Image (cartoon, rainbow, N blue to C red; front, side, top):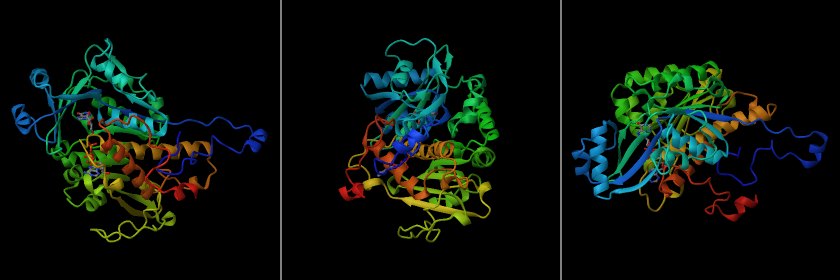
Length: 433
Ligand SMILES: Nc1ncnc2c1ncn2[C@@H]1O[C@H](COP(=O)(O)OP(=O)(O)OP(=O)(O)O)[C@@H](O)[C@H]1O
Ligand SMILES: O=c1[nH]cnc2c1ncn2[C@@H]1O[C@H](CO)[C@@H](O)[C@H]1O
């Protein structure tokens, strides 16, 4: 596994590169590897640029992700094709994207649970999905189904908003039998999306619940990303309860945060969400991103950055602390951190699709790095207490933000490569230190 975050290139884990001299005395055991797991509705994104009239004509809702039936999908697809409006087709799905980006960044294994068409022909959507997924994402546990995977029409309007229309195919047919309990229990985290809870009578919801129970039984953090505010707005109380019962880490954007908590102010929304979970990542578009969580009073570390004003005064005071589960803290202290977009954001943003998923994959990388390090260097002072991540709130913010930038700067929500070893934006002296 690679070292997480934007740091010097020589910063790899010490476990793989011990001193060659001492190696001869104590032969290095090959490091014990770690992985994460995730469940998704297997989807291909079909991206098109359309006007508002198109959205209305097809009875969609701007900014929402709506399920559509086969007839509506056929009408929509035909109109896109006739107008030659399709600009790209690539593998998608919130968790699919997150696992792919995790594996690309960490150079490590992630395991995806979902479905895959049992009959595939070269060039069809299932084929594309497989071709566009990192070889580090383990797809060996996918459930074969007798039909197509899902299609996600990703409709971008001039205002930069993206609207999803989902033609489900067999994406919700995942059965609990295809959740590998052992893999979930030995993973560093289990990643899920709120979309899994809207499958009606299809079995993917029960499969997700089983994975959640397996993860919880083995103390594996359950990481939930909220998907779209409309889903949460329908029944915020239900989601609050769900998060309290099952979720360790919550990822959302500011609109979803407001839908969940009723708080427009991001910091206050995060503060509220901490009543239900242990760690929050909240992206805020052009305002960058926020993290909130707990650390134990005795392990808090003060920042050397400027103290920031906000609805919680000097909220970033202890952002150099490492996130912990509330239950592991003798005296839990709420900690917040914020970062503005890396380099102010890319010069040109064609669409922001997947920027939030990118940030989450960076957080997952840092969490997995902690487990990897603990498994291999258990005696390190880092593991005197039980932290949820390898790095501090401030460092994870930096890393997540950097990854979002990379997603924004390219076209697809999936990274085509890891981050550069050296940041051109950082002056030479930084690397020589
Ligand atoms: N207009 C912008 N300018 C600069 N940076 C941006 C802009 N929009 C997004 N970002 C960066 O991308 C990150 C995530 O953005 P955003 O809050 O839009 O995610 P999201 O709505 O969850 O996206 P998605 O659901 O498509 O993955 C932000 O934290 C920020 O770093
Ligand atoms: O219902 C859904 N289930 C799973 N993923 C979805 C759904 N709707 C949209 N996306 C996915 O969200 C990603 C951007 O965050 C897109 O790539 C899209 O595939």
